[in-house]
Length: 304
Image (cartoon, rainbow, N blue to C red; front, side):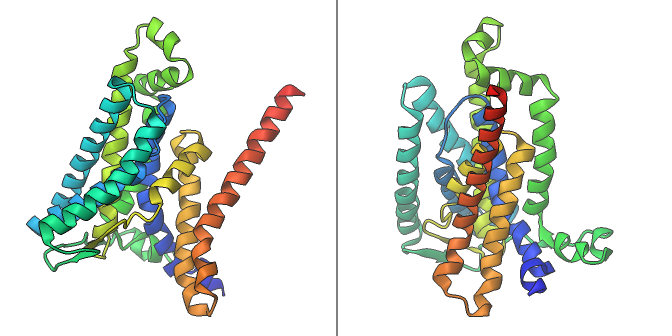
């Protein structure tokens, strides 16, 4: 039982499952703190996943695939920004339209470019190799789940620290947070609000694309239609729970990742698959409830 819940296999899987959520949610934190509502992470990740697989297919190089995924994420962010910042579109409506459109777009591209439906499996699609970290791999227990991951896992973990420093220890982060609190006051103080909103939006798109690259190139070496499977919405939940703070956003990402990994471990225990598949979403609801209770207590104390 201990091995099922806290064994190195489960913990290693939890890190892998959390990584795309971390990349998407931490990138989206900048949009959140800039006061921009974006729930199109699902669309950005899905398009990124397709072009990651396509780039790896063309070159047999997962790193080229990741670069193409990041480029696709930037294009999606560019479209979102044009509709929201310049055409006056409602962020919620644009996000929903992009989420629906991305599903149809990737399915169409899959058929037009590869003459197949459902999934693309090809030996030319190469996944990221696993990396053994010399010092860490020799540490008992910890080394067994922390070492031997792919590069994107380590990038996702490093991004937590880098994003927190950028958000709270630099003038850029100060301006982003000022815009989110009061855009008009920030504009009056001489901050170019539109430029900062655009930069936050492009950061979000860049990391959503990289998160999408994780899905086909983490070892699967394939692309399937709608393979994001709601991860973009879990990223939105993490952003809201963490209130755009990269360090706090990381916590629900790890919880969701662990819940997903646990479903894999529990499949061999004879538990009904329908119950197992509910675990990540039950974890989401539980974290949202706990977060809401915490905010309610803070609000109540302020009134008292």
